[in-house]
Length: 117
Picture 1 (tube, rainbow, N blue to C red):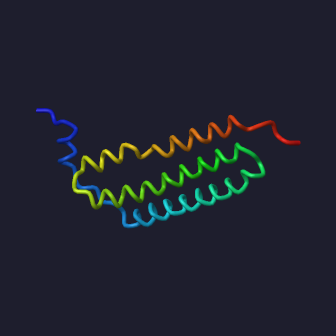
Picture 2 (picture 1 turned 30 degrees about the vertical axis):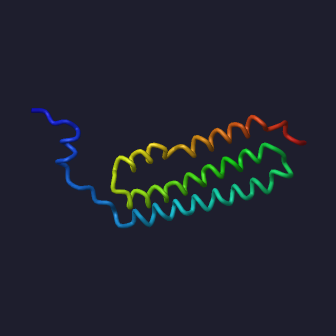
Picture 3 (picture 1 turned 30 degrees about the horizontal axis):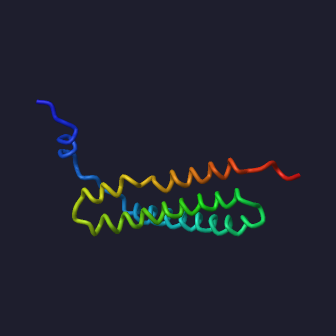
């Protein structure tokens, strides 16, 4: 009798997460969010002087900031929600803000003008 992948996973030993994992994950998530917040603020501040293109890069930075916030929201929602289907449904959108940020960056690059000499 052959085992399916699910049955094989059920027979495996429980995975042990290293003690440093939450600190490293939360620290890097916080630093990444702080970095994208700084990039967004600087981008919007520079958009007045340099035109339309930096504004699109700033919006891209806001999308990536929202991506980091989304992970915090997902973690809190996942701990408090009893229905695993709702949690998995929300997890399907984990890359939404990265895709939107990439779209904004592409528009920003497309709107770049000739370099000023």
